[in-house]
Length: 121
Image 1 (cartoon, one colour):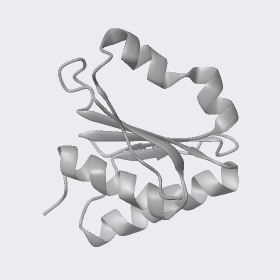
Image 2: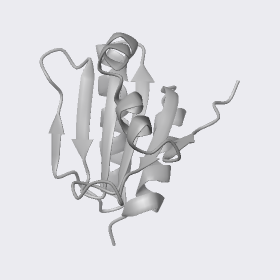
Image 3: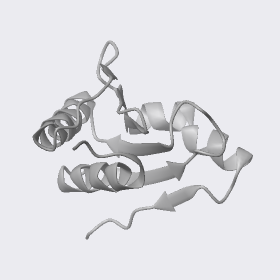
Image 4: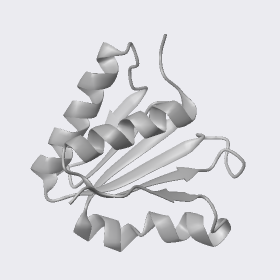
């Protein structure tokens, strides 16, 4: 059985953490939009790191019989979007993340939707 919702979002955040992704945020947006229930947003050090994180998420979820609806790697992999239906993952370089500032958009709508993951030292 495939994973969904909060369980899926937390699993993805753990995979990101394992691959050394940084500043992992989970947004519960199910009461704010019909497109998804959760956003998981993280920072990677470079396009190659974005790809490595995305590949690991895809591989580990495939083992759990959960496949993406779509994956968009863009032109240079500095922002990868992975759509798992109930969860959309944004893996971004620091430059892209600072420029698009997705967190501020959602926090302005509802400041209580963010769950920030504590990173290991």
